[in-house]
Each structure stands twice: as structure tokens, then as C-alpha cells.
Amino acid sequence: MSKHFFFSPFQRLVGGKPPKATPTEAKTATRVKLPKGTSAPDWAEPSPLPHAQAPAIPYPIDCLTPGLREVVEAIANKTQAPVAIAAQSVLAATSLTFASRAKVQTLGSSFSNAASFFVLIALSGERKSATDGWAMGGVTQTVLELREEYTQQIQEHEHAVASLDRGEEKPPRPSCPNFLVTEPTIEGAFKAISSGAGFLGWVSDEAATFFGGHSMSKEKMALTCGIISKLWDGAFFIRPRVTQEGDGYVPPTPTTLNLMFQPTLIPQSFGNEFMLGQGFLARMLPAWPESNMGNRRYRRSDPRDDAIVQEFQDVTANALRTTLEDLAEKSLTLSDGAFETCVAFHDDIEPQLGRGMWAADISSFAGKAPEHACRLAAIMTLYEDQTASIVSEAIMANACGIVRYHLQQFKYLCVAGTNEDAVAHAQNLLDWLKNNLEPGSGFATEMILQRGPIGTRKAKVMDQALAVLIKHDWIAGLPEGTVIAGKPRRKAYMLNPMA
Image (cartoon, rainbow, N blue to C red):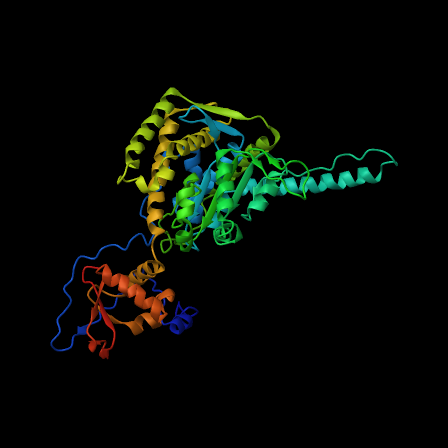
């Protein structure tokens, strides 16, 4: 029996090829016979499609502190997800558990919340949820324990109330500190804030429900972006409501935000002029890592990685308990060396904000880069020493290195946000053609409609994708009547010999 027995019928149904036992498949070299009186295409060097895929920019893992780097590597090893996915989730978990009551000195000599915002873009199947599950394991366990404790306290409260004599004052009803929001809505966030924990974790591995939902509708977008921006800024709110007691005062609430969504939402987010201009996205540290799918052979989890991840979960759980119980605010100042390092980082970026310069069109994010670095430096400092009060020069230099990575990512995402859907389909089709055909081979549209990428099996979508590939010299149209695979074709193309 074939080793592909279970897979082959489905492959025959959709017109594809079953996987081979070897890492690479043989490509088809399809001969082309042009009609008389016509000549072969005059080829030019093909040009890359504009930001249709994640950039090949490695995450600067060496810039993490030793303890955090060890955890990121362990989770990346366990899940085989890109390092950037693990880093974003680990830093978000650390921000929530260690930095929710911390402020850090910035270049303006003022102090800002250390808690940070993160946003991750990755394909479905890239193991975002699994990675975040390991990173947030300590937080999740603490939330469950708090719910159990609250249930017990409610039972004891009800028993105490039932045993009161007439006229005796009832004891106050217990409250459960709610600091975590996993369904990203503004009302849900304010409800969590009202529980009185004093900080907020806004985490979602399915942020499509946020960017594509009611909170980001045309009517609500300005309000939502403004509120989230003020949470990052550390501002208070006055939200009087008819149905509530008091004047609606909402205190400044340090917030850690970590949103994850798929690349299909890039045009709706990083291509949205309002989100960019208002500064909503500029407050987030973005990452769109290169996919690791196709390179993940099964392997057993290494016990050493398991131990490292378990220790991180224990450490973050303990830190979260401390944050919940100790309401005192801590302040971190920059050492002289750290301050000078951040100034140099600022002065390196500032000239790039001028007209026509590299960062001119991402000035909202680039202008906040030094503060992002200060916040990251505080988070990493507190993870290594929860009692620390000074950010060292070395950690600040590393934080600046991480923010440089995010600067590149932000710029790339803004360009990708301007792409039409046809570019993404063209990239998928190009990858498929290069994987299945030898350079210089001919192909007919029937081949794409029957066996090509799912997204291009509609004629209109296919034609748009082919037009993009022609524009960038990856393929060329051939005259009607060109013979491919022994048959004259009405619509035929050739893959660039230099592909």
C-alpha cells in the first residue's frame, strides 16, 4: 500500500500532487511550440512583488536579556514557530506581570508607563496560539486560581449573610480582580478596569474580531483608537453614564496589549490612513515574521525546554501575584549611560524624519521610538531583577536594537498595507509556479484553474494575478494557438527563464 494512501484520493480530487518522501519534488519542464511567424518573449530581469510576503528580517534575539532569550528560544523550539512570535508573546507576558505598576524615565525627564503594546501578524497555522499559550501559561493559571478563590469567598459570604440576625450589617461582598480581556472590545476593557485591579492585560490571538468588528466600524473607529491611545499614554477618562453611580471617572490604567491577526487584515490596519495618522498603530510594536511553515519536521519536546518554560510560567505567576497584592508604584530611572544611549538613538532617528527621508512617512511611530525603547528596557530590567530601580546602559542599548527591528517592520507593513488583494494572490501564484515548473516552462490557464492555489481558481482573480506577474516580468503572455503539452492553447504563458 502506498504511504500516501489516505492523502492521494484527496489530491486527485483537487488536482494536486501527493507529497513525496523526499524534501523536494521534481518540477515539470513543459515544452512550448509557438505559432509560425511569432517569436519568443524578450525577457527582462524579474522584480520582486511589492511587500506581498513577510520580510526576511530576523528578530534581534541577541538583544534580549539572557533570561528572556532563554525562554524565547525554548518556546520557539517547542512550537517551531518563528522566533519573533515567541518574543512578542514572552515580552507581552513579562510586561503584564512585571511592569504593570512600573513607570520609567524617558528623554523628556518625565515618567511613562513601562507596560507596552504589541501586535503580531502571522498566517493561520503559524502556531501563534500555541506559542502564546506557553508564554501566558503562568497568567492563565493565576486567573483560574483567582476564580476558584473568588467562588470560595462568595460561598463564605453567602453563608455569613444567611447567619446574620435581623438588623445586623451585611459584610461587603467579595470582588475578583479582573485584569485580563481576551475578547477585544472597549466595553469589555472598561468593565475589567472597574474591578479595581489597577492595570489591564488586553490579549487576543484572534484580533480579526477586533479589527474587523464593531469596535473598528466606521462609526466607532475614532472613539476606539482614541481610548486605546489614551490607555498607552497613561491618561484618565471621564465617562459618565446614566446607568452608573458616580461621575464616571476612570483612573489611569497601565495596559499591556498583545493583538494577533492574519496578513489579510494588513490593508484594513496598516493601510488605514486614520489609524496611522491618529497614532493608534504608532503605539504598538509590530512584527510580521517570515513563515516557518514547510520546515517543521516533527520532533519531541526537549525536557530542558520544558523546564525553562515551566520556570517562566512559575516566575510570571509569582510576579503577577505580587503585582496584584502590592499596590505601590515603582519608578525606574535611566543611568547616565542609558540616558546617553537613548539620546544617541533619538538623534540617529530624527534626521530620518525630514521630508523625503526614510522615516518621513512613518513619523508617528519613529517619533515614539525612544519611548518604546525606554519601556522595553524597563520590562527587561524588571524581569532580571524585580527590585531594580535603574536601567543600565547595556539593557538600553539592547532595547534600542529591538526597536530598530520594529521600525523596519512598521515601515514594511505600511507599504504592504497599500497593496491590492491582487498582489497577494500574485505572490501565491508565483510561489506555486516556481515550485511546480522549471524556469522557461510554458503553462496554460487550465493548469491554474484546476491545480493552482485555491485563491486563484476563479478566472477573474487569476487574470488579475497574472497581470501583476506580467508587470513584474515573472511571466509573459504567449500568442493564441501556442502549443503546450501537445495542445494548442487560447491563453498561454511562459515562466521567466530567470525565475
